[in-house]
Length: 183
Image (cartoon, rainbow, N blue to C red; front, side):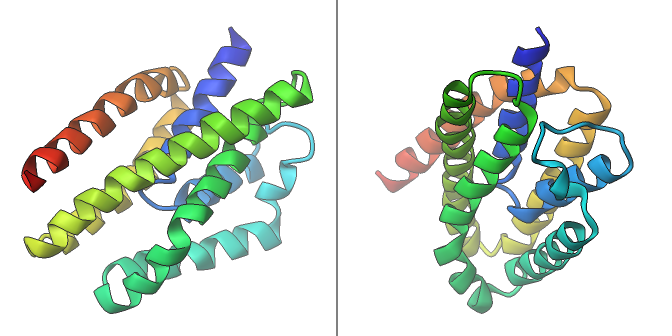
């Protein structure tokens, strides 16, 4: 059961990367630093001072960029591959007590896939919100989700299971809504 919960935590955190790439990494680093959570061997660097500074600066830049649409266009080019990498990293950092092939398969396919899917869904919502002049509202919603969900998961780990179950439903709903809007 512990392994399943660790996988769900990694996947849920990977999903939050779709909202903000660096916020879940920063929160994970902070929780690691204060010894609230323990990461798999080799991933404790996420809570190191240099990593926290890098994640903090990247988070501030990412948040600022999302409130300035012209600058945000540049970030969109980098965001999808960065989201996939962050999703892989977060998932792998929680599931270390298994066969490395299985661990990295879950991290790459699951974590990277979930992060990419959530990022793609959020990008579709952003595309609509920019045409409806709702960008600031969506940006605030992204900030709140990318911050609150990781904290909630670390405080109440069973929420990761709920989030992993609800996220695919949300992505399907957003995809269908966007598809219907285009037709």
